[in-house]
Length: 198
Image 1 (cartoon, one colour):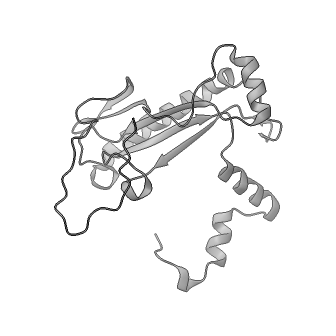
Image 2 (cartoon, helix red, strand yellow; image 1 turned 135 degrees about the vertical axis):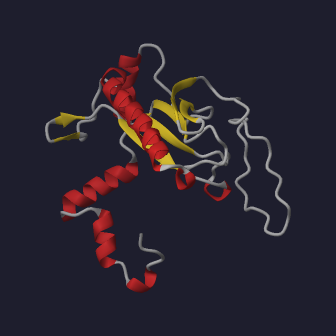
Image 3 (cartoon, helix red, strand yellow; image 1 turned 180 degrees about the vertical axis):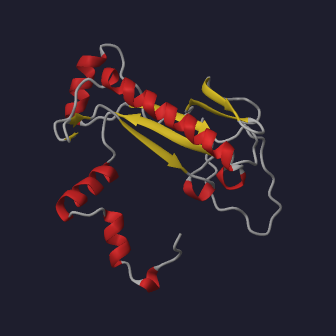
């Protein structure tokens, strides 16, 4: 059963952190690992996936699902460091580089294999002569308020046969207006609405 603890942190009470299942090694099988200056980074299958692979007779099922826009695929988690209190904000740059290299290696592998996994291409997903068979989404979330049920630093990686709706919307916006939505937003955003400029 998935842990549901995405509630606001108590403000004036002593917080007691429950034992971390990642630190205890209570994970699914590790599919990739690399040493860091301290500890290591590793990737495993998500115990609570948002996407599942096609079942038997996947070619026929893939064609049917593609036409119905039913999402299928894989869902992984990359643990930034095996050390509980280490994440992007407090790791050496060289370690962050290793973490990104392993993330990029997984993305390359997923995209290379997606042609076999998703043989049917949706007709609107073709651009510059390249036919897309799969789409990789990488999500970084942290903390209870955004639904992160584990504090141990991590990224989620999903491979899907369906282009995420937000990406499709941005794609259409750029084709219609000749600029990305983020460029439009930066140009049109009122200065008194600016929270922080990075």
